[in-house]
Image 1: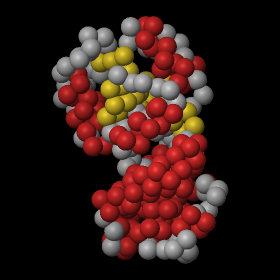
Image 2: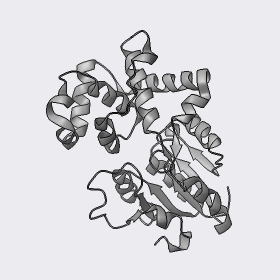
Image 3: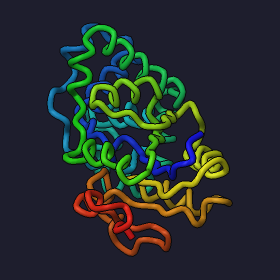
Image 4: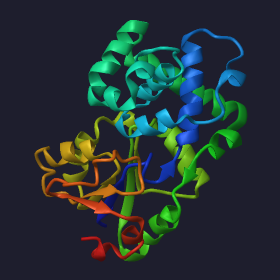
Length: 258
C-alpha cells in the first residue's frame, strides 16, 4: 500500500461518458431476455431523450436494462405518466416493472454483462468507441502524480469492463474497484483504514450523502462532479460536506479545490 494520499473517483459520469454504450448494451440485454432473434439490427441507433433524462437516477447496470425496456414499451407506464412522475417514485416504479416482467435485478445484470463480454470479444474497438472520456479529465488524472497524489477508481460497473476502458484511454489508476468489491461506502471504509484519502469525486449526490452518513467517512472531502449525470436539483442547496466541482476547478491544483 502506498504512503501517498489517495484521491478516489467514480467512473461513469466522472471519467467517461458512456451514454451511447449504456443504451446499446441495455437494449441488447432486453432483447436477450426476451429471447429475440436478430438482436443487433433491432437496437434503435439514437439514444432517446427519455433515457438521458432518466440516467441521473440510475445507480446500477440492471436499472439501465429496465429503463430500456420501459422506454420501448408501447403505452407502458413510462409513456403514460412521463419521466418526471416516474422518477418521483423511482424505486417503487422499478419494483412494479420488475414484477410485471417477472425479472430480477441479478437476471438483468447478468444479461447486461453477457452483452458487454460478447461485444468486447467480437468487436472490441467498436465497443470501446461507444465511450468517450470527458474533455480534459484524462490529462488531469495523469497530472495528479506531479502533486504527490495517487488516484483510484471506485465504480458500480464491472471491474473487467472498467479496466478495458481505462487501458483504452491510457489511464493507470493505483487501485480499481468494480461492483464486485462491495458498496462504495464499504470500500471507502476499508481504504481510509489503510491510507490517507484526500477526497472522493462522484456525480451521484445520493451516493455522497450515504458516504458522509457512514461512520469513519464523515470527514472525507466529497466532490460532486458538475459535468456528470446530475439531476436538475442536485446543484442546489448541497448538504454540508459536499462541494460542487466544475471542470475548470478540477483542472486547478488540488490545493485550490476547497
